[in-house]
Image 1 (cartoon, rainbow, N blue to C red):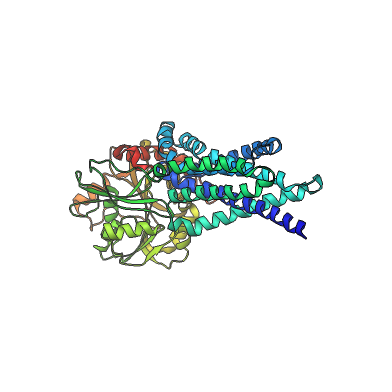
Image 2: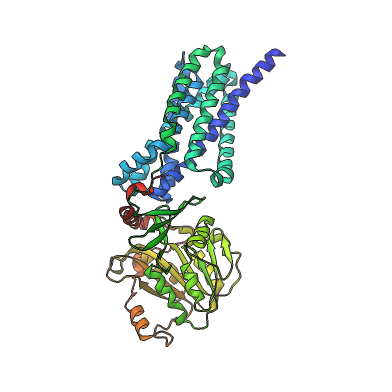
Length: 516
């Protein structure tokens, strides 16, 4: 009986160990986006790099861990866990220097190299735990299959639990840096517990001394790690009025008193701007949207997808139009309300647009899509299927207005052409306007309708008409790709745009302002 109890505890602590370390793997992988996104964006390239680096690190960990398990005589599992703890703990401390060093490499290579340097050491150490645990759990060759399967099954269950716990509970409550520090401390505590269970194979002093030494190093670095975030410079050029790490990014309200403007940003993307002196909108493309009611008199109801600072909804209110707003990030909605004086005239909907538009009831006289302005774009919102859903919500004389940031390239940009081709698949008529003529990198407003739009409307003044007509451009759709839920290469088409956009924002404020 005592043998059975002893055997149970020997197995239980191993399963408990691989469960927790399996959870730690997914926590580090998911947290990686929160550290990288403010600098490189939350694009497909960031996720691709993190997944690839995780797999590379785990593969190396499995291989090296198997060799270490067969040859180790004086070290045990506790030392591996303690090393993983220290390497996890220092990730926030290293983030700034690594991101600054990889910035010249560009979006794709910079993202990959930074994730490789930051996360592969700790992930590799966590990968080594599985083979080591299998070695300890296997008493004879007859049980090697069952032991291996059980160890990796429990580790995978831990990964699932870690993913759900982080995404559903920790992310909304605790900052990324604090989670990393907490995870490092938890792994140190786990290493100490494992050292106690290893005392039969190894002397307790042999296992605890390295753990205490590593923990002491980690404790010495803790103040620097806790203060590893970068702040704005002391010249007061930029003043942070609001800052929150939301589920979808790093949301901030930033003032520049010298140049009299206020910005609403998510990571390195600007999604709203206003004059500090009068609160008026400071983005030219939104002035084009303000003329749309004159092109279709009688509008009474609108939908704004991508609320941002809410200026377009406030402009439409002046025309007597009630606007429902749809915003995925509650932190953005709060910032718009508290710092840009936004008050919704219709429904305020918080959620992902692709889901929420299926729940809406039309008709809308105007639908504005303003979600394609930042460094990374929600490509699932720019497909034939999405456009068809929006078309069903439009009234008979309704207009869909879509704002899109890109290079003009004399009308031959494949990304712009793809938007034109995709809209044309659903809407028989469209007009395209450029925000600032003469600049290659620009905002483009697409107006898509089921009927011709009269740009000579008497509701426009001569000045407004000339101003609008001067911004009309032609896009050749032959260069484009029809974007669907099945095939949507928008992110790859917009790589140059994402890099350039990030460079504009970073150069205006400085690199360190976008490092967590």
